[in-house]
Image 1 (cartoon, one colour):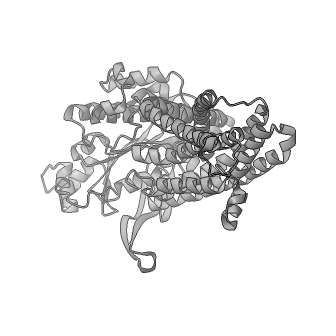
Image 2: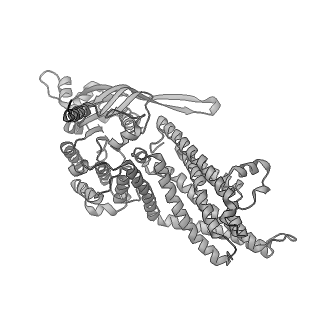
Image 3: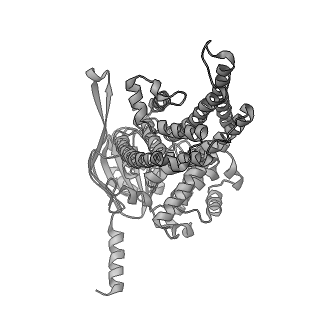
Amino acid sequence: MQATAQRSAPSRLRREAGAFVGFIERQRNIYRRFWLWELVFFVYSLVSVLTIGYLATGLGSGGAPSGAHVATRSTELYLLAGALLWSYLSLVFMEVAYAIGFERWEGTLEYTFMAPVRRVTHLAGIWAAAVIYGLLRTAVVIVAVVLLFHLDLHGANGWSVLCILLAATLPLAGIGILISILPMMAPEKGEQMTVAIQGVFLLVSGVYYPVSVLPQPLHALGDISPLTYMLSGIRDALLLGRGPGEMLSLFGLMIVSGAVLIPFGLWLFGRAETRAKRLGLLKRTG
Amino acid sequence: MTGSATVAAQAVAAQTVPAVELCGVSKRFTSRKGMPWRRTATNKVALHTTDLRVQQGGITGIIGLNGSGKSTLIRILATLMLPDTGTARVFGLDVVADAAQVRRHVNRVSVDAAFFKSLSPWENLLYASRLYGDTEDARTRVEEVLGQLGLGADTLDKPMRHLSRGQQQKIAIARSFLTAPALLLMDEPTTGLDPHSKREVQGLIRRLRSERDITVLLCTHDLDEAEALCDRVLILDRGAVLADDSPAALCAQYAGVGEEITLEAAFLRLVGRRIEDDSEASEDT
């Protein structure tokens, strides 16, 4: 025990980097231990995406109202792109939001919050784990979709898709931080509130239809949702083959919205943490 | 002053800084019921205005009935709760203004072993090591501490939920040792343990005191444990400090002429209630 007591303290940066890895490693271990649950969620996600895909196929092969002309291939790609991205985004949002709720349920929230780790490292670690897991799971769904729908992606620009996903990481991180505040503010209802907020994003961000079909108030919400631009850009890359050079304004928009949302999210999270400590809400029982 | 004299003076100054210092710290909780336009508020004092100073080193016991403010005090020191009034300092650092620095020196063992129950002890301990930035030889050190607690290395890779309450609590104590804190806050660490496990944990706390330069704040319901382990005991009742002395001095203070009493008897005479008779609300404040 003496040896333990006399160990030299690591540098602050090294400690934060180690903690960042620790959060990713912890989440990985949780996914591994709950593998059966993860399998259930994966099947649900796959089935949801396939259902949307076959809805497009059905509309193109006579399922649409008489007189309506539906271009099957482009409709499939349009809806599948939305379904796949929503599958990925909803997983990431839930993982980030649930990280606080899950810790409260396990009773470890106080332990994590009293650790000598900056909150930005904590949230970044959880976020990174969710993004890595979300990308891996979505990649498997994409393989299944490509095989089942024989999608022709020759005209698509993969680099653009990758660049948009990377640029969109910033605003998505900001939204994730904002969503993760809710379970801390309201121990019992917070998680359900995150589901409701996800539903609003689904409604206004043009996941399955262009935002132009929405009535004006919802359209306005869609216009300020970063997801709208992310989805629109990815569809342009997939359906129209637009290259990264043609989307610079989109990348700029993503970076600027991330530069606003992340600091704002961290500031608000700090306020929520202070409130939780004032009211004693970090306890297991809330 | 020469360089060595300056260093020596700084070392003496560091030693004289109290491990814990509370000045006018109080905490109350307000619960509101009813609709927003017709709310009724109920206040519950968790900790009355408290002044307290604990010097570095040794084990200080905090004993009191449920609702006396023990856990609130521990949470404030662990930077998990903000006091309503006053200032709380750990090694001279304010727990609110310097919370990030305070956290580097503090660890806590709570009454309910706080772990990811689906993860193994090793996965939980590795997570703790990463948070505190000390993963070097972690597995070896963990096995060493668990051996001292009577837990075999085979326990390390089973899910926590498969372990008994006593085993989980031992892992919680091993976790706090792993991060080498200067101030260890122990909130009823032996509550719910069988007598054998309780003795092992108490033995480890004793060894910790003798081998490490550490200050332990031990909240307990077990007055025999407090008498056996603590150098000093604080008796809290309804959030106020009623007594603050060594167990022997407290026993002597409340004993009659020529009488020898236990700490339990001294507590009864001071508080007017036996700790076993504690039938207050079970909410742990």
